Image (cartoon, rainbow, N blue to C red):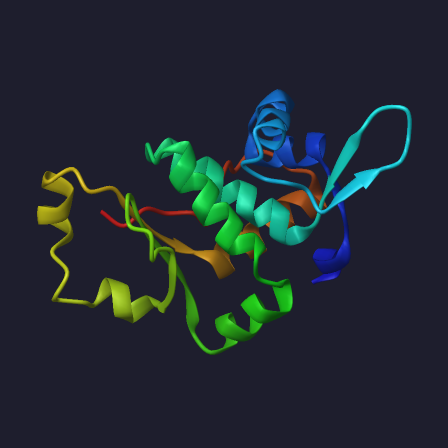
Length: 166
């Protein structure tokens, strides 16, 4: 993918995620995400690499699913601790679903899709009735769809590729 090494402005990422630029800069100020690069100039301009962009997209979806900011920060930092190359190796081996459970510190985990979807030992309906928030997010799909949106500057698809398991 051509954009793997590109840096993106907050405005461009916010448009792709259909969020206000101020929301993203607020998350930066609150240290929910810390961009890897700051452009030199009179004003601070944050530049986001592809992993930062993916982490923001996942954070936005987790916020929509009513995860707390602390839980979102944990998931965002977990994603940002990994390189794009290591994620791509995992995806090539079939480990592409990030599983997040609210209030569970060993999460998130990276799983094969079948380990989550075809798992008869997890009763998702019962967990949901108990008020346990969880999400299974296909990182590979989310990444590719987000990069396509950033490449085309089309901001109509929201947090594409991000889906909650219900």
